[in-house]
Image (cartoon, rainbow, N blue to C red; front, side, top):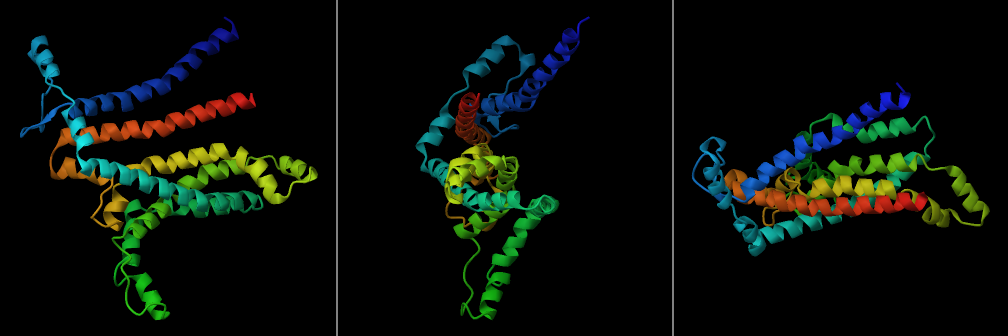
Length: 304
């Protein structure tokens, strides 16, 4: 038996594994959510109709299938509450991701320029916050930003302000919490890309008369774009559906889509509308993934 035959079958099985994982843990749950999104709310258990009962026979299954409708999606498109929630989530995600990139890129670049022995130390300092619970870290910001919190006490002691300011329950507090929480997600892919860049390219650019700033924009930044794209996606996608940080740190006058989904599911017990919100959110978040995949493919073809 040739070596090619020995390794072909395991390689094919290994290639199938990601698709099986996606089918079991994404497509199947998504199918259930989509079915609930096409159902109607009911005072029952579960709180929606129709419910597919495979033991009732084929005719009952067809009757239940014909009862599905797109009414919940029509509601999302016609109600300003949901439209404004989606728009606010996208705006918050875009602004937060831009702030994270503006702060994270210089930090990652500085880490990649450190001596080799100090880079693991810098990386450990970035990862250290993950050693504690996410909720504990957010609650600590509540203690800092509240009316009689550490921030107001410090500013009063320094004489910068003469009375406590309202920091908590504001958009500023929400952005602060988001940037603090997602900062490592921006740093890690950027650092992984920047630390692997070939310094001889910068030396060649300098020999050709480029200044450091010009060499950065012509050499370093274009080569780091894969890390930029990965960091942007790792931050933007979860921020759009963020619930905990806006609920604890932001005001309650305007909700993000994660808060609206939670309200429909747990407070209103409207599972079909909540499922429709989740389906639309998934479709919206697939768009940047498809754009990134297309850009990556074009980048690889250009290099090849």
